[in-house]
Structure formats: structure tokens, C-alpha cells
Image 1 (tube, helix red, strand yellow):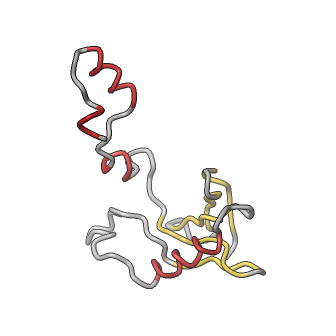
Image 2 (cartoon, rainbow, N blue to C red; image 1 turned 120 degrees about the horizontal axis):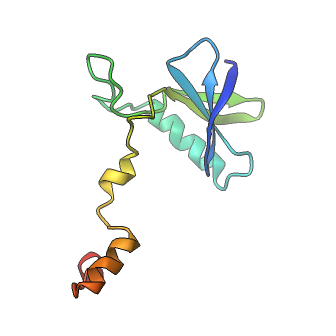
Length: 120
């Protein structure tokens, strides 16, 4: 596998294009990432047990999921997942995290509601 252009950089690693496979991207964990070995073992387990329905029958990717482990000279370094159009994508934590942002707490506090006791 040949890595192409960098698409994104984040806390855990860097996401690259995969040359010759435009439907894939590769996430390579940062070398100094805490518990990198544990994360790579988790990814290997995820590759072995993909969830049903991650890709709809029409090809629409509902959930990106590790497809393959990327192995470097010293062992696992990351994983390959399906590429999605991020222009219309929503990160799952933004819809699954029901705790309002702190700015909402200020607005509700100003109106006399005690929101913190409801979500603590």
C-alpha cells in the first residue's frame, strides 16, 4: 500500500489518501501516541468483527469502520477505512452526546433554569 496526500491531522494520527484506491483512506497513528499498541489491538479486533449495515445496499457509507490493519516495519501502525465525503458528514459524537455545550449552560442559567443538575 502506498500513502498519498495528507487529508487530515488529528490527535491520534494522520489520515492519508491511499494511492490506487480512491475509495479508501489510511489513518496512521502518531508514533508517540499514548497506548498506541492498545489502539492497534483494538483496531485489529474491529477489523475481525465489522457491524452490519455500515454500508447501505446503494453503497452509501453510514459508518466508517476499520477494513484492514496497516502494518509497518515495527508492527501495526494504523488502519484503512472507507473514504467518505466529509462535506456532508457528521461526526457521531456530535449527535450521540446529549450533554449541551457549556455555552448553553450559561444561557439556561441566565434564564433561571438549573441545567447542570439535570445533566450531572
